[in-house]
Image (cartoon, one colour):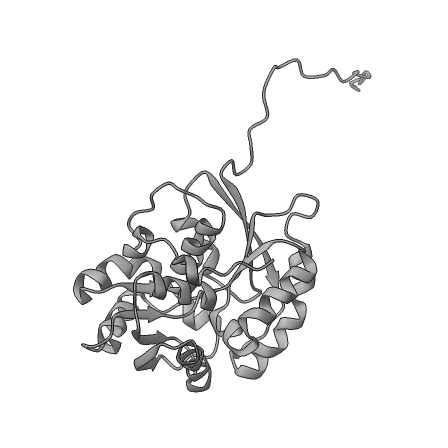
Length: 267
Protein backbone atom coordinates (compact mmCIF):
# COMPACT_ATOMS: atom_id res chain seq x y z
CA UNK A 1 0.00 0.00 0.00
CA UNK A 2 1.39 3.31 -1.09
CA UNK A 3 1.82 5.93 1.65
CA UNK A 4 0.65 9.41 0.91
CA UNK A 5 2.84 12.25 2.10
CA UNK A 6 1.33 15.52 3.04
CA UNK A 7 2.86 18.95 2.94
CA UNK A 8 4.13 20.16 6.28
CA UNK A 9 4.59 23.85 6.89
CA UNK A 10 7.79 24.60 8.84
CA UNK A 11 7.25 26.40 12.10
CA UNK A 12 9.77 28.65 13.82
CA UNK A 13 11.46 27.22 16.92
CA UNK A 14 9.96 28.90 19.94
CA UNK A 15 12.84 28.50 22.40
CA UNK A 16 14.18 31.61 24.12
CA UNK A 17 17.98 31.81 24.24
CA UNK A 18 20.93 34.17 24.26
CA UNK A 19 23.73 33.37 21.78
CA UNK A 20 26.88 31.92 23.33
CA UNK A 21 30.02 33.86 22.43
CA UNK A 22 32.55 31.98 20.32
CA UNK A 23 35.86 32.26 22.12
CA UNK A 24 34.69 34.75 24.76
CA UNK A 25 38.26 35.61 25.79
CA UNK A 26 39.58 35.86 22.24
CA UNK A 27 40.07 34.26 18.83
CA UNK A 28 43.54 33.07 17.81
CA UNK A 29 44.29 32.25 14.19
CA UNK A 30 46.96 29.72 13.27
CA UNK A 31 48.56 29.61 9.84
CA UNK A 32 50.26 26.23 9.80
CA UNK A 33 51.89 24.11 7.11
CA UNK A 34 49.93 21.76 4.90
CA UNK A 35 52.23 18.99 6.12
CA UNK A 36 52.05 19.86 9.84
CA UNK A 37 50.79 16.99 12.03
CA UNK A 38 51.22 18.54 15.48
CA UNK A 39 50.94 22.29 16.08
CA UNK A 40 47.13 22.39 16.37
CA UNK A 41 47.20 19.68 19.05
CA UNK A 42 50.00 21.39 20.99
CA UNK A 43 48.38 24.81 20.89
CA UNK A 44 44.94 23.52 21.91
CA UNK A 45 46.54 21.60 24.77
CA UNK A 46 48.16 24.77 26.16
CA UNK A 47 45.44 27.31 25.36
CA UNK A 48 42.80 28.01 28.04
CA UNK A 49 39.26 26.85 27.33
CA UNK A 50 37.79 30.35 26.97
CA UNK A 51 39.97 31.01 23.91
CA UNK A 52 39.32 29.49 20.48
CA UNK A 53 41.89 28.45 17.91
CA UNK A 54 41.05 28.68 14.22
CA UNK A 55 43.36 27.16 11.64
CA UNK A 56 44.25 27.56 8.00
CA UNK A 57 47.07 25.94 6.07
CA UNK A 58 49.80 27.20 3.78
CA UNK A 59 51.11 25.30 0.78
CA UNK A 60 54.47 23.67 1.33
CA UNK A 61 56.38 20.59 0.38
CA UNK A 62 58.73 18.13 1.99
CA UNK A 63 61.66 17.79 2.31
CA UNK A 64 62.20 20.62 4.81
CA UNK A 65 65.05 22.40 3.07
CA UNK A 66 65.98 26.08 3.07
CA UNK A 67 64.76 26.37 -0.53
CA UNK A 68 61.35 24.79 0.15
CA UNK A 69 60.90 26.87 3.28
CA UNK A 70 61.60 30.07 1.36
CA UNK A 71 59.22 29.12 -1.45
CA UNK A 72 56.16 28.69 0.76
CA UNK A 73 56.13 32.31 1.98
CA UNK A 74 54.39 33.48 -1.20
CA UNK A 75 51.21 31.66 -0.11
CA UNK A 76 50.91 33.52 3.20
CA UNK A 77 48.62 36.39 2.05
CA UNK A 78 46.12 33.92 0.53
CA UNK A 79 46.14 31.72 3.62
CA UNK A 80 45.69 34.70 5.93
CA UNK A 81 42.56 35.78 4.04
CA UNK A 82 40.89 32.46 4.86
CA UNK A 83 41.06 32.95 8.64
CA UNK A 84 37.43 33.74 9.58
CA UNK A 85 36.78 36.20 6.73
CA UNK A 86 34.27 38.81 7.80
CA UNK A 87 35.04 38.19 11.48
CA UNK A 88 38.81 38.10 11.85
CA UNK A 89 40.96 36.99 14.76
CA UNK A 90 42.56 38.90 17.63
CA UNK A 91 46.04 37.63 16.83
CA UNK A 92 47.46 35.58 13.96
CA UNK A 93 50.17 32.97 14.54
CA UNK A 94 52.52 31.74 11.84
CA UNK A 95 53.34 28.20 12.94
CA UNK A 96 56.75 27.50 11.47
CA UNK A 97 60.03 28.28 13.23
CA UNK A 98 62.36 27.28 10.42
CA UNK A 99 60.20 29.02 7.82
CA UNK A 100 60.45 32.24 9.81
CA UNK A 101 64.21 31.82 10.13
CA UNK A 102 64.81 31.62 6.38
CA UNK A 103 62.25 34.28 5.37
CA UNK A 104 62.61 36.76 8.22
CA UNK A 105 60.22 37.74 11.00
CA UNK A 106 59.36 41.16 9.56
CA UNK A 107 58.68 39.73 6.10
CA UNK A 108 56.39 37.04 7.56
CA UNK A 109 54.36 39.69 9.38
CA UNK A 110 54.18 41.86 6.26
CA UNK A 111 52.86 38.97 4.14
CA UNK A 112 50.25 37.98 6.73
CA UNK A 113 49.08 41.58 7.07
CA UNK A 114 48.57 41.71 3.30
CA UNK A 115 45.81 39.16 3.82
CA UNK A 116 44.72 40.43 7.26
CA UNK A 117 45.42 44.17 7.49
CA UNK A 118 45.86 45.50 11.00
CA UNK A 119 45.91 42.10 12.73
CA UNK A 120 48.51 41.49 15.43
CA UNK A 121 50.97 38.83 14.31
CA UNK A 122 53.44 36.57 16.02
CA UNK A 123 55.72 33.75 14.92
CA UNK A 124 57.93 31.24 16.73
CA UNK A 125 61.17 33.19 16.37
CA UNK A 126 59.72 36.50 17.55
CA UNK A 127 57.83 34.81 20.38
CA UNK A 128 60.85 32.77 21.44
CA UNK A 129 63.16 35.79 21.36
CA UNK A 130 60.77 37.73 23.60
CA UNK A 131 60.35 34.69 25.84
CA UNK A 132 64.10 34.28 26.27
CA UNK A 133 64.47 37.95 27.09
CA UNK A 134 61.60 37.73 29.59
CA UNK A 135 63.46 35.02 31.53
CA UNK A 136 66.72 37.03 31.27
CA UNK A 137 68.49 34.41 29.16
CA UNK A 138 71.61 35.53 27.33
CA UNK A 139 73.30 32.20 26.69
CA UNK A 140 71.17 29.45 25.13
CA UNK A 141 71.52 25.86 23.94
CA UNK A 142 69.38 25.00 20.91
CA UNK A 143 67.79 21.68 19.92
CA UNK A 144 66.04 21.16 16.57
CA UNK A 145 64.70 18.25 14.52
CA UNK A 146 66.06 19.71 11.26
CA UNK A 147 68.77 19.06 8.70
CA UNK A 148 72.09 20.81 9.49
CA UNK A 149 71.55 23.75 7.11
CA UNK A 150 68.10 24.53 8.55
CA UNK A 151 69.37 24.07 12.11
CA UNK A 152 72.17 26.51 11.35
CA UNK A 153 69.71 29.11 10.04
CA UNK A 154 67.80 29.00 13.33
CA UNK A 155 71.00 29.28 15.38
CA UNK A 156 72.14 32.21 13.23
CA UNK A 157 68.87 34.05 13.87
CA UNK A 158 69.40 33.91 17.62
CA UNK A 159 73.06 34.87 17.30
CA UNK A 160 72.05 37.86 15.18
CA UNK A 161 69.63 38.89 17.95
CA UNK A 162 72.51 39.04 20.42
CA UNK A 163 72.19 35.67 22.14
CA UNK A 164 75.26 33.53 22.72
CA UNK A 165 74.58 30.01 21.43
CA UNK A 166 76.52 27.63 23.68
CA UNK A 167 75.56 24.45 21.85
CA UNK A 168 73.28 23.36 19.00
CA UNK A 169 72.07 19.91 17.98
CA UNK A 170 69.65 18.60 15.35
CA UNK A 171 68.00 15.24 14.71
CA UNK A 172 68.69 15.57 10.95
CA UNK A 173 65.08 15.03 9.83
CA UNK A 174 63.73 16.43 6.57
CA UNK A 175 59.95 15.99 6.73
CA UNK A 176 57.15 16.91 9.11
CA UNK A 177 55.79 13.39 9.57
CA UNK A 178 59.13 12.16 10.90
CA UNK A 179 59.38 15.23 13.13
CA UNK A 180 55.97 14.65 14.71
CA UNK A 181 56.84 10.96 15.07
CA UNK A 182 59.75 11.84 17.35
CA UNK A 183 58.84 10.33 20.75
CA UNK A 184 58.64 12.96 23.50
CA UNK A 185 61.05 10.80 25.52
CA UNK A 186 63.68 11.21 22.76
CA UNK A 187 63.11 14.98 22.73
CA UNK A 188 63.58 15.09 26.50
CA UNK A 189 66.79 13.07 26.33
CA UNK A 190 68.13 15.29 23.55
CA UNK A 191 67.27 18.43 25.53
CA UNK A 192 69.34 17.08 28.43
CA UNK A 193 72.22 16.33 26.05
CA UNK A 194 72.26 19.71 24.28
CA UNK A 195 72.36 21.68 27.52
CA UNK A 196 75.62 23.21 28.69
CA UNK A 197 76.47 24.30 32.20
CA UNK A 198 76.76 27.96 31.20
CA UNK A 199 73.48 28.08 29.22
CA UNK A 200 70.76 30.17 30.88
CA UNK A 201 68.02 28.26 29.02
CA UNK A 202 67.40 25.53 26.46
CA UNK A 203 65.40 26.39 23.34
CA UNK A 204 63.63 23.53 21.53
CA UNK A 205 62.76 24.62 18.00
CA UNK A 206 59.91 23.49 15.72
CA UNK A 207 56.13 23.57 15.99
CA UNK A 208 55.88 20.08 14.45
CA UNK A 209 57.52 18.21 17.33
CA UNK A 210 55.71 17.16 20.49
CA UNK A 211 57.85 19.11 22.92
CA UNK A 212 55.13 20.87 24.93
CA UNK A 213 54.47 17.82 27.09
CA UNK A 214 58.08 17.47 28.24
CA UNK A 215 58.72 21.10 29.25
CA UNK A 216 57.97 20.69 32.95
CA UNK A 217 60.08 17.52 33.29
CA UNK A 218 62.95 19.05 31.30
CA UNK A 219 62.94 22.10 33.56
CA UNK A 220 62.90 19.86 36.64
CA UNK A 221 65.94 17.90 35.48
CA UNK A 222 67.87 20.80 33.97
CA UNK A 223 67.01 23.24 36.78
CA UNK A 224 66.68 26.03 34.21
CA UNK A 225 63.97 27.40 31.90
CA UNK A 226 63.03 25.53 28.73
CA UNK A 227 61.45 27.43 25.85
CA UNK A 228 59.71 25.65 22.97
CA UNK A 229 58.22 27.05 19.77
CA UNK A 230 54.56 26.30 20.51
CA UNK A 231 54.80 27.23 24.18
CA UNK A 232 56.34 30.61 23.26
CA UNK A 233 53.69 31.20 20.59
CA UNK A 234 50.87 30.73 23.09
CA UNK A 235 52.63 32.87 25.70
CA UNK A 236 53.19 35.74 23.28
CA UNK A 237 49.70 35.52 21.76
CA UNK A 238 48.14 35.68 25.23
CA UNK A 239 50.21 38.73 26.06
CA UNK A 240 49.22 40.41 22.79
CA UNK A 241 45.52 40.05 23.68
CA UNK A 242 46.21 40.93 27.34
CA UNK A 243 44.94 37.62 28.70
CA UNK A 244 45.43 37.64 32.47
CA UNK A 245 44.42 34.21 33.76
CA UNK A 246 47.26 31.90 34.91
CA UNK A 247 48.58 29.06 32.74
CA UNK A 248 50.17 26.14 34.57
CA UNK A 249 51.92 22.93 33.60
CA UNK A 250 53.87 24.24 30.61
CA UNK A 251 56.97 25.80 32.09
CA UNK A 252 58.03 28.78 34.14
CA UNK A 253 57.74 31.05 31.10
CA UNK A 254 54.06 31.61 31.90
CA UNK A 255 55.12 33.29 35.16
CA UNK A 256 56.78 36.05 33.12
CA UNK A 257 55.55 39.05 31.17
CA UNK A 258 57.40 40.42 28.14
CA UNK A 259 59.86 43.17 28.96
CA UNK A 260 58.26 46.46 27.79
CA UNK A 261 61.42 47.64 26.02
CA UNK A 262 61.49 44.47 23.93
CA UNK A 263 57.80 44.03 23.19
CA UNK A 264 57.18 44.15 19.47
CA UNK A 265 53.70 44.42 17.98
CA UNK A 266 53.15 44.37 14.25
CA UNK A 267 50.79 47.13 13.07
